[in-house]
Length: 78
Image 1 (cartoon, helix red, strand yellow):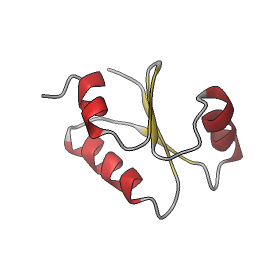
Image 2: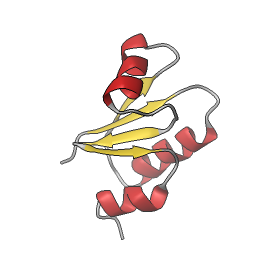
Image 3: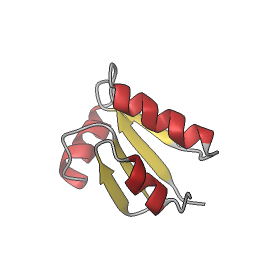
Image 4: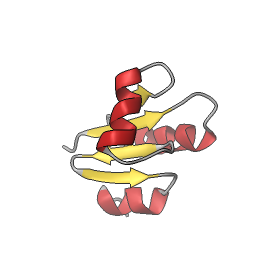
């Protein structure tokens, strides 16, 4: 099974939709809140070159921003 990490922050409706989507399809994922976790924020910016949430990391694939179609593609959801 893929390792999935969702970088999120409070008051982010696309983040909530993304987490709900993953949950509905039965995926387990780690949530990293960039407002309360300084390391997560640094990783988001420096490791994944992203400044937006949600940013989803699936194994080595990075999806920046709200893109359910890309999530479906990467996770083989039809």
